[in-house]
Amino acid sequence: MKILVVNAGSSSLKYQLLDMTNESVIAKGNCDRIGIGGYISHKTCTGKTLDADCTFATHTDAFEKLVEVLTTGETKVLDSMNEISAVGHRVVHGGELFKETCIVTDDVIEAIQQLSELAPVHNPPQALALLACKKVLSEGVPQVAVFDTAFHQTMPKKAYLYGLPYECYEELQVRKYGFHGTSHRYVSAELAKLMGKKPEELKIVSCHLGNGSSITAVDGGKSVDTTMGFTPLDGLIMGTRCGSVDPSAIDFVEKKKGFTPDEMTAYMNKESGFLGISGVSSDNRDISAAAAQGNERCQMVCEMFSYEIKKYIGSYAAAMGGLDAVLFTGGIGENDAPTRANSCEGLEFLGIKIDPEKNKVRGEAARISTDDSKVQVWVVPTNEELLIARDTLALVTKA
Image (cartoon, rainbow, N blue to C red; front, side):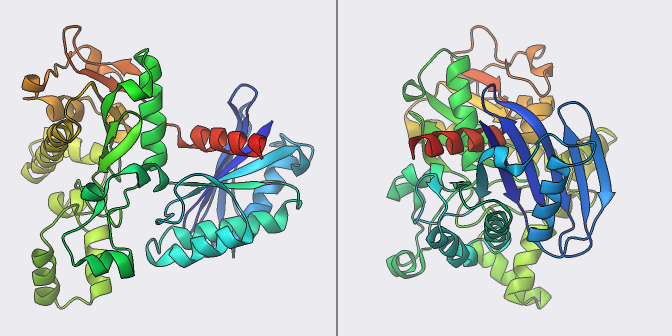
């Protein structure tokens, strides 16, 4: 069975075509600059590539180009799109409406659009991708929606409610939703396999660290708390996002700088975090290089980031009443040994000991804790596309 996985952004449409008989990637690519020109980067499993300027006025145009490169020319891997059994879509925000993966219907698309106020950057283009796919593919091809927020729907109320008047939750649905759920679900399940355990047997702190970062407490295979909140702005400092800040500080800065609420939101989302503190870059690689050369503000970014990760590891161990493993994933988590080491430094009292030699690993699954470490520490590469494909296959087969 061949399954197409689609991950749409405001001006992009990333995709992977997978053969689920062996879970191999047949082709993958990205249609970028939708609405502002257009560019496609495409690669097949045989090494054929295509990089070209295009005209993508809409997501439908991008999807039509996707069909073209999959079925024609040197990058052809399908005789026709009829070979595709289903399409799985990543959808960022499912609110409280979607607690699990579901088959896409017109009502589902409408509900995703209605949730756009909670995720204005992500949900609208993802709804457009669903409509574009429906328009281009034959009517019998099922579509499946996999929600980033769904994994966190197991959080108890004590973890997801804010200290605002209860009417804010009842009337406005203001609560912690959590994000990166697809990644956290995938890597925590993979770690259980690596440890030879069942997910139900483990208490795991999952650290997804990248340009956007979040940490999740996974108890018995279920999310019980996570750092991102009502939006992906909460929690750790990130590439351009500020993370947790006293709300009164936000009000103070907004007034002093004369910002509108929308300008303040943009300031916190796009000009803060690594970029805002360092004044150098939002990219952890640039920050680390500058820190090594003595840049004090970049050194401070590194210290703040690791310190915050360390605090959440400790607090989530307390929340779960124990800890069996810590895992690192995402672009930074999988590749940055100093961040991993510094985040675990001083946690020996929890039974965490990092092996410096083992910690040199990059981009592959490996245990990086010492043999006598009571809590195992692992690097586990994430693969959200594969999880989406697996969910799609299971749901379509069941249906």
